[in-house]
Length: 403
Image (cartoon, rainbow, N blue to C red):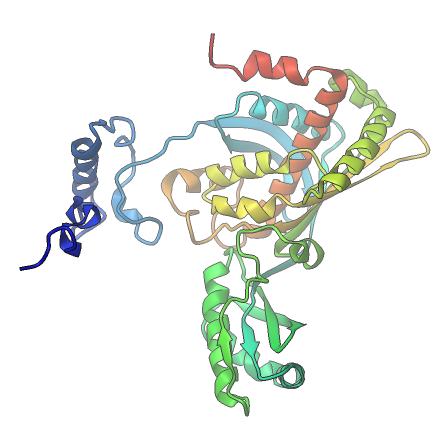
């Protein structure tokens, strides 16, 4: 007879109740209700609000598992924001999902400033998504020679990768040597999808072709971690991941002072101080708070919010012009966004993308320009509020929900 104290079947994990599943249809209102009832049985908590939603759970396969309800995040409306981009042109009303009081009001104020100047200019300057396998060899010489072989055989590698996708295009392969390893950073265009899964599948096919055709038949790991998926990295800041987008504007004191209570000269002086602070902190972003606007847009518009870890990285560059005007730019180096696939087709998220005229194929570059314009609006507002002395008072007025 087995000892019940040592029998794995009697452990707490084995005895714990299992989350309900339905092998016939695991995406129905009925199974979601059963999971909420299960939570009540296990914890005593009634999920009254989690269980209220307006869409058919049948649309969710591919987006979530063990569905039981929704997390309702309030959406505020900011704008209009006038954008002068290659893809986004005109006045846009921006949906921002957040629980942080003052955020929407602050961005709204920045949008007014930019619009009063005739709009913010936004440009996508680079666009590619990565996967970075690593191949292993006996020594560094063999690894270096492998890199030469990859360069010679790039067309065949590209064909193997692109055979797995209708829209993905392998643009180039970066190479990095460490000991007897050769890291390959595959760079793809991915259309209107963010593309992480797309490039993973394509790169696996390419690596299998390499392994079969290279004389050494080298072993590989599909991700050597220099693609830095959902992690900030300096390589992304330098070489881009997702979309590299610039938002820029030249501000005039005649508009700045009445709206923001500051001058271009004051902003430039503060920029010098902020630049030094970001340097000594080792910050991935020398701006104020790009993550706020990006996150609020991502939640509203069905983006993978974990990509904010990379997408918030930015570089601010400013000039105080001879006539006193203030040129202000921010470059988002690793903006990962999509208008097709992922969560973009879910009901509320699709509505928000449709508000912006960005839903579906052909919308990703437009959405990227909108994201950059929103970020710059937030930068101008927060930076001005800190200088003008109304940063704390604004949060006290709008950001407190306690007596």
